[in-house]
Image 1 (tube, rainbow, N blue to C red):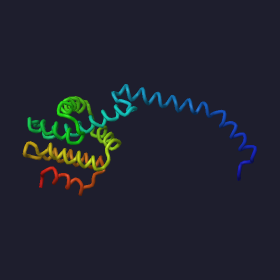
Image 2: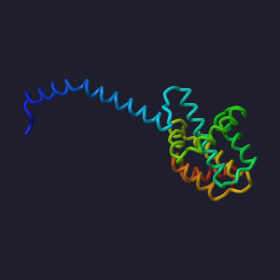
Image 3: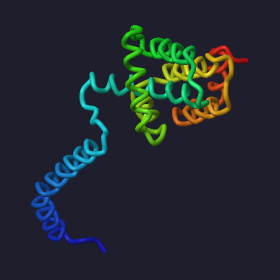
Image 4: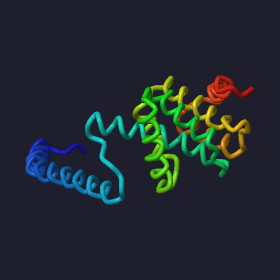
Length: 178
């Protein structure tokens, strides 16, 4: 049946004695998580400036993924990526060019899209995500041909950003594709 009142008191006293140890364990787990994150090349996102930089890099990296999807990078596509970064993030051309360069290095080391889309999901609201998808379509069509790999990348990103198929198509149309 039910435990007696004295059993509950003993359990309460026992648990009360263990609480400092539990708090220390939680603190140690957090320290370990921080150490692992830093050692794997990840960055802990603590302050507003770092969060903004992570968001900017994630946006630029997704645009670079579309840029490289067809294995043929033209000057027009690179210009469109710079313009698209500015369109999504409201940065000047110099900042956009520097961010493009940084994003290219980041994408070279990336193993999947999730690291970028998870940051976008944390940092952007739904309308900003739709604006990003529209800019991805602009990059894809900037060389006058949308390759099937470019469309595939955009579809995968939309799934990871929780953008519906209807919104995917609407962004495609706004991006100048019919």
